[in-house]
Image 1 (spheres, one colour):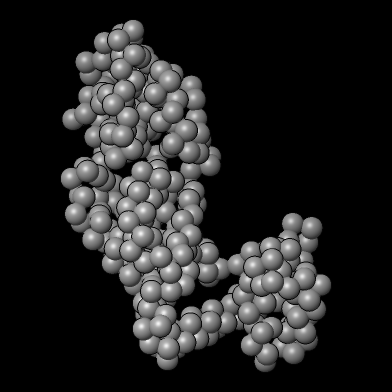
Image 2 (spheres, one colour):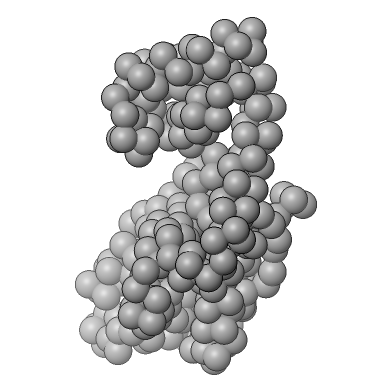
Length: 294
């Protein structure tokens, strides 16, 4: 089995598109297609279902993906070990983080990290769904649910608090809110129910059953903008809202919710010095700023 063909297989499995895989590999799409067919011929099995939408793995493709991914990760780890410190502070680390946490808490701190380690390239990706670990989408993920995949290294990163917020101007011109039930008489902003990827985001329904938001978005950043513009009330992460003095907590004691961020990585990836540096940096940053998150 040709290792170059396996690398092509891995890239198509990750991107599900020949065109995207060819760009990442630096070869043309026809070469990618030819190598895939060669690999399938060697294995005497179909690895992808092909359609106008792209390439999706077959059952046999899923089986090969696990083996090929492990080989790729071990090869990266072995290369770094063999070259020692020459690669310790070099290379790319792809970090997947939820949108608001990435924008407001992680990104500002990564500026200092990148200045300290200029040879480590950080790809910061916003996550609005569960990570496809089998596709190697990221090296490290920060998630709102503890990943069920027992093959991962998983740790609690931090707790964070959410509270109902409104803009200062909105509260000045609207009916007074004294109890939770009063919130029903105000316009609400929340998530699109059928597009919520985790029950951890369904906090508005738990706090205010049968409520009907007038404005919905899959982006909590967009929700926060709507609140700041005076459209209504929304439950927002405190670490996001505190960056905007015009956002005022509403019944903070009664509407407060605590959630947890988890950090996860493949064991083989964590052996890479650059990945472990980012992992430890995020853990230290969260621990030192726990009060900001609550």
